[in-house]
Length: 70
Image (cartoon, rainbow, N blue to C red; front, side):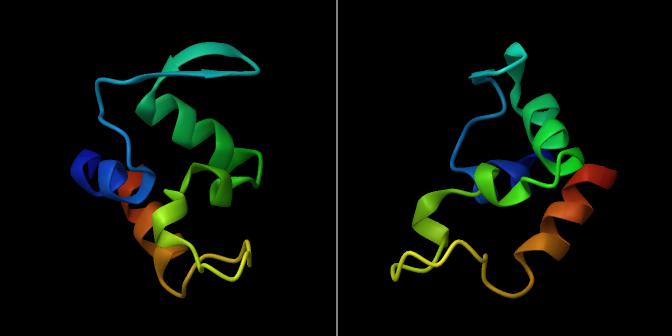
């Protein structure tokens, strides 16, 4: 699960991510964004369409849901 999360976010599990709630680890950051309905904000921009569309490619949300269950 964590390895998939690293692939989706482009960040290492050991990274500390700064956010509105202070510094949190990668898994907590992704969970927070997902519960706030902002999961697209955690995806690595290299995985998103180059046309500026914020909608992630089909299946990315499903993979993210799997990572959050692990």
